[in-house]
Length: 371
Image (tube, rainbow, N blue to C red; front, side):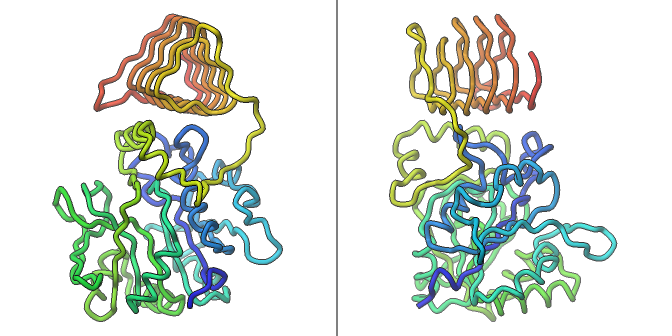
């Protein structure tokens, strides 16, 4: 039986930054705010610690200052420890570039950390998938299926992400074929959560790097689908793969559905985040709030409908906000009107101004901008 303390976890914090350039221009994918008071990395970190995994390496590439500020020592996830705990893994010099251009290079650049770890198994994951799933079930699936590699997947519309794998899966759960960048509307697609023995990961990635291979999907999974027993566990949990600003907006809006919210914020598997000591949300006597997520520290004096508000957002009297994602510490002036928009942190919206986006194409306002 595989024990949680025998599993090393590796998280790619910069995976698919290019899919969300508006929000990752000054931060990593892992530190993108989501759901009012969380960051994208919180969900995968919480999945790991809820399963008892206590050693986590976070691979970074660029723009990781906000990620470091958010993660700190790992205390909110109980990963601030003398032994094991959280390790930030900045880019290690490979060749002449000084950074990495692929997952193979990212893993290879941190192979010293992986090789020195005493854990027998490795779980590798990304940050762009918002999901609350049982890692214990994935480990049990790996044991029961006698797999060399186990992957987590979901059936549905395939996200528009580069090098994303879709699978043909047999009745026993074994992957019989791997397609990369498949042009199909619906399929069993990878959530980029992989579980295998550490020795196997070392062999596969060292061989691929030595052969100057660059695609994990093609050169490791697709190339070994017949020689290795790769099995896929399908999940029915709420899962949102962020592949664009539109899907980021849609994923936030999906939290306004109680069923999705209850699945993601499961009481048995809590989602942890950095603590910010603040007062509870304040609602003025004339305020109106309908079908919205309002975080602590907010002051609502106007009208908020079908929106997600981060910590410390101030909505002045007469202001109207509909179908919006407002990140922390934004100020919405009196009489302002905003619909179908995403406001990054610390945006100031002056009194009486109007901003309206389309239902299927939200307007984005960058961090710290004054309108």
